Image (cartoon, rainbow, N blue to C red; front, side):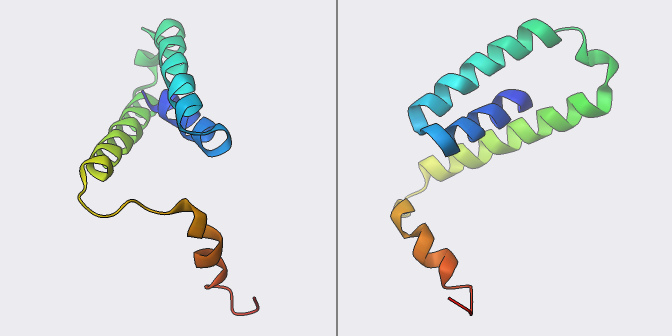
Length: 87
């Protein structure tokens, strides 16, 4: 699950929401196919990828269920530059 989350977040950042979800599902299926039974030998890696995937899903679900107003991604440039004293 962790590998699928990483791939979907990267695809979301570069390609948008829909393609991020598509890439995440495809990466999850590919990870299941190639790693089923193999990752059992790497307990720490499996545990950290699982924890990363679960925490990302929990945060995403909590954000989507929130009643707070949606974040305006168009203001990121203004918000980030306001922290730079030389700008």
